[in-house]
Structure formats: C-alpha cells, structure tokens
Image 1 (cartoon, rainbow, N blue to C red):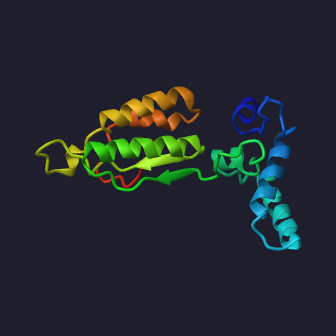
Image 2 (cartoon, rainbow, N blue to C red; image 1 turned 180 degrees about the horizontal axis):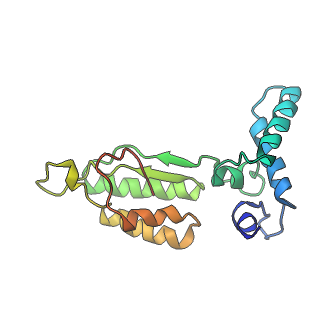
Image 3 (cartoon, rainbow, N blue to C red; image 1 turned 90 degrees about the vertical axis):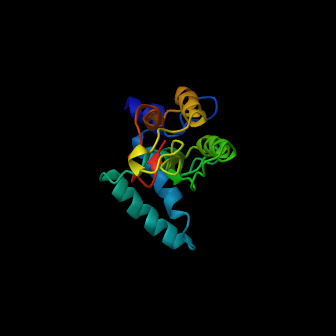
Length: 170
C-alpha cells in the first residue's frame, strides 16, 4: 500500500489523493488506455477489458501506471516507460548534448537508455574495453538519483557496461 500510495497513486499538486484506492488507479489507467479508440462504444468496451486485466494482475510498468490519465494533474509527464538514446559519438559536445537530452527526458517522467560502447579509451580497439559512462554522465546520474524516484539511475554509476549491450537503462 505504501509503494502504491507514494509512487503510483495520482495526487493533486497540493498532495490531495485523486485516486481514492488501488481500484481507482486501475480505473484511471484503463480509461486512459481506451481513449485511443474512435467511438465511445469501443472506448467503453476496451476500458472494461483493460480494467479486468488490471484487476487480474496485468499491471503496466510504473510510469504508465503513474502517469496514464494524469494530464490534468501532471501535464508535463509521459507514459513512455523507457526511451533509448541515439548513438553517442566520442566528443565532449556529443556527450554533453546527451546529458541535456537525459535531463529533458527525465523531466517528462521517462527513463532513458544509453549505449556507451561507442566511447573507447584513447587507443583502445577492443569492445572488451568499453568504458563506464563519461564523467559528465556520471555526475548527471548522481544528481538525478537524488531527485528521481527511479533507482535504476544508480546502475550507471555502479556498473561497467557490457560491451555488447545495445541499450543500457540509466
């Protein structure tokens, strides 16, 4: 109940709960997922199906549960759970550009993944020498870990990246 209330329960800006209980959260998410349908009849049909699925354990990823149907209270958020950044070319401008991109992505409530294998120590020719994230990224990750409820941010600080990993979530 504590995790639901602190991470997924929709609250107004003043902290007043909008979702009265977990089923209220399920109803909000089901309604938001069904809104894409073109007719009210189809929306109702799919809302009922999504609500059934939610009540029976088909719970979407955290950002979807937290942000779906929440635009009136959290207009700058997204239901995208994790995005994958483009290739980071080995230059300071490119690295700092990706740090800026990460800030905007995290601000919208999304996660972001990176592939650091394109960044090699000077003279390295082997993928086995894939470095840890560059210092500006590590600094950004450490800073956002203090303000973001998303624990995977710490992974980028604590682990060296596997050389064949195509997208590493920060």
